[in-house]
Length: 277
Length: 343
Ligand SMILES: Cc1cc2nc3c(=O)[nH]c(=O)nc-3n(C[C@H](O)[C@H](O)[C@H](O)COP(=O)(O)OP(=O)(O)OC[C@H]3O[C@@H](n4cnc5c(N)ncnc54)[C@H](O)[C@@H]3O)c2cc1C
Ligand code: SF4
Ligand code: SF4
Ligand code: FES
Image: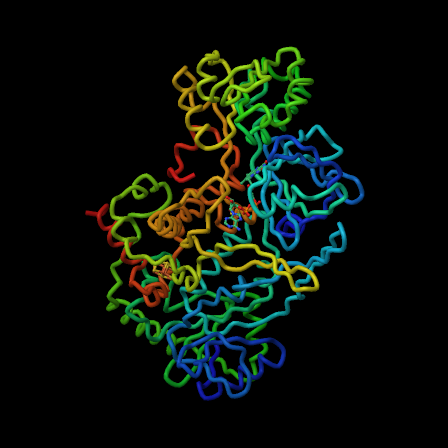
C-alpha cells in the first residue's frame, strides 16, 4: 500500500531562487529544506505547490529530470496561490507534492525521431522540461525545431536560455514570434498557428503542442492541414485539479482523469474524449 | 446461522458497545432516521433507510488532513489524523453496502487514499435485508445487489420477532463471537421465508423493470450529444443535493482553514453540479448547468463502468429520487435517454 506521502500530504520545499521572466511570469527554484530535489520526475509531469492558508495549485515541472539538484516552476500570476508566490522571497518555504501525471514518451516514442515543439505563452513551461531532456540526450533524437510565440518580446519565457543555449545547439532550430510588431524586435510577427503553417514543416516529425486552448486548436488544424497525422502530435490538457491522483473528480473528462491519465495526450486519444476540455 | 429475539437486540448493542463504537439508524425527534452512535435508550429505527448515506463513515463530509504552523518563512507540517479504532456500522442496506465497493474502487486503487483505507480497515459492516423495499428502490437494476441477502461482514435479517445473523468474513466471525452468548444456533428456515417475502415485494416494485443495459463503458458517443440533456437539465437548480445524499458520489475539495493558531488543511465533499467545480484561470470547461448535469449522469452510467469492468456508479438506493427539489433523478435520465436507444 502506498503511504501517505504519496497522496495528499506534501513535503516542505524552499524557494532558493526567483527569476523574473515576464511582467506576469516568474520562475521559482525549489528544493527540500536539506537542499535536495524533492522527488524525481519525468518530462511533462507536474507538482502541487501550496502555501498553507492560501491554497494549492498544480504546476508543470519546467526543469528537466536530468537536473538532479533542484526543480523549477514557471508560474503565471492569475489568482490566489500564484499572486502569493509572486510576492515570495528567496528562503520562503512552501509545500510540494508529486510528481503527477503521465509524462511525454521521451524514451520510446520520441527516440530517434525529429521533434517539433510548438508553444504559446506559459505553455513553454512543460515543454522546457522535454526540450532540455532531449538536448541532454542529444544523440538519441533527430533534428529539433522549436516554435515559440508570445504576446510581445517581454512576454517570452526563458528568453535568455533560448537565445544563449537552445539557439546555439547543433541541429536545434528555434523560431520565435510575437503577436504584434514591437520596437527592438526584428524577428517574426504573427500568431503561432499561422507561423507554423508558414514554416511548412516536413511531416517526418513528432510534434508537441502546448499553450492556450485556442492556440492548440488552431495549431492542430494547421498541422493536420500540412499533412501531419494526429498520432504524430502530442499535447497537454489543463483542467482544474485538486487531488492530483484521480480521486477528487475535478479533472474528469469522459473516462479519463487528466491528472492521472494526462496531462500528456496524443491528439488522436483526445478524439475519444467528449468535447469538454 | 444464529439468532436472537428482537426484544433482546439492545443487549447485543450493549455488548458490542462495551468494546467498540456502534452506529445504527435511529429516528431523530423529527422522525428522520440518522446513523447515530448507540447508547442505552437508543432504538434501532424501523425506517427503510437513512436520508444520509453511510458513506460518511469512510469518507466523511469534512475531514481534517493535516495542520500547518508558520513562523516567518518557515512551515511546520503535522499529521493530525487520529488513530482510527474499530467501529461497527449496524443495519446497512444492500444498496449502501454495495456503494462501499464502488468507493473502494476509487479510494483503494493506486495510489491508495490512506485516510479512507484506515477507516475502511477499522469498520465492521453489519448489513440487514430490506423487509419493506419502497417504490423509490431500484437496486435490482444492478448486478450483485441482493436486497434479500446483502453483503457486509455480517448479514442480518429482521423478522417480526427475531434477528438472524450470518457471518461472511473474518471480521464478521469476530463480531459473532462477541455476541455468541446472546444468540443461539438456528437453521435457515425463517430466513428463507423472509427472503421469499422480500423477493415477492421486489417483484411488485414500480421500478422493477428499469434496465441499465443501454448504458455502460464505451457509450460516450451514444449518449453525450443526445438532445434530451437539454430538457432533462432545464430546471436543475445546481443545488448539489443529489450528489450529497448519493452513497457513491465521491468528488471532493481540499481547502485550508486558518484557526488563528495555524492552518488546518481539510477535505470536504464537493459536487460536479456546482458552477465553480471546474472553474479555472483560463475559463470553465463546463459552463452551463446542462454540461454539469450531464457529467453527473454520464459518470455514473458510462465513465465509471468504463473504468470498472462494467460496474455502474449507482446502486439504486433512491435517495436522489426522494430528495431532488425539482424531482429530477437518475431514473428519469435512464428512462429518457436509455429507453430511446432500446426502442
Ligand atoms: C496540469 C497543469 C499544469 C499547469 N502548469 C502550470 C505552469 O507550469 N505554470 C502556470 O503558471 N500555471 C500552470 N497551471 C495552471 C495553474 O494551476 C493555475 O493557474 C492555478 O490553479 C492558479 O491558481 P491560483 O490559486 O493562483 O488561482 P485561483 O485563485 O484558483 O484563480 C483561478 C481563477 O479564478 C479567478 N479568481 C481568483 N481569485 C478570484 C477572486 N477573488 N474573485 C473572482 N475570481 C477570482 C482568477 O482570475 C482565475 O481566473 C497548470 C495547471 C494544470 C492543471
Ligand atoms: S444516483 Fe441516486 S439512486 Fe443512484 S446511488 Fe446515487 S442517490 Fe442512490
Ligand atoms: S438534479 Fe436535483 S438535486 Fe441534483 S443538483 Fe439538480 S436540482 Fe439539485
Ligand atoms: S485532480 Fe483530483 S481527480 Fe484529477
